[in-house]
Image (cartoon, rainbow, N blue to C red; front, side, top):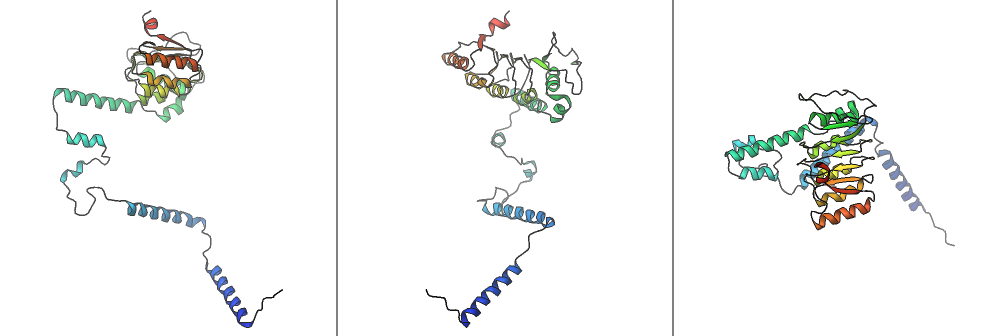
Amino acid sequence: MLRPVINKTNRQICLSIISTRLQHLSSEPKPPEEGSKSSALERIREELKADKQRLQWRKPIGERPGDWHSKLKAFENSEQTSDYIIMMQKPINLSPSAIKEWWRKRNERVEKHMQQFIQERHEILGPELAAAHFLLYRGGAVKFLHERNWLRANEDGEFNLPNKYHPAFKVEALRCDNMVLYYEGLENLFNLQELKFLSFHNVQTFDDWCLDRVSGSGYPKLEVLDISSTSCSVNGLSCLYRIPTLKLLVVNDPKESLEYELACSMLQEVIPNLKIVNAASIHDL
């Protein structure tokens, strides 16, 4: 076997390599301490922000050098959606019908905002009493477990319910009939463990999207659901497979079209104990 020959020149080269490596290791930075971690994160964020700005393919109109600015820029909308652009392109219409439509949409936006989910209310009242307060204030009716009578607000809009959580109050039935109830407000009716009856009869704002939210709101004991005289179509029936405990579904007419009748039949195959009835047989009694 051939043995490597280490002469004086090779020895000097090896020693120089080792010394260079030791100097490199001694000059390496030490691991950052706890105090310097935040500064490192801030530096990384600034670098990412600069990279995004550099990779932006063009600047928005009005931010480029040399762009003309009007004094009306003070009224500019920071979130210029397509609806805002279309509105700005339309001529001003001060006819009575246009003003009435604007007022209707304005009230609708206000009501949607008022019906939004409030976390503090549910933390104080719990889901059962929070849902009862929400519906009674807007003209609905509530029936609690082990109670025979329905609870409604009086003519002054007042009702007698605890203002904090009480374990004895469990909602068994809800009537939202003839209410103005939006998709945003349905989040206040979730996680009702003892709910068996739920009616949205003649709620014109209740559509397929609302029905989809109701089907996933956590009603493990729901048996009766009334969606008659609403805006629900055949497309919304498919989401009701999420409620296997459903026994009675009230609709306008199960045979209003061939497509609707087929959807009802398929739903009954998924939920064998489900019975779908015409609203006339229920509300005309």
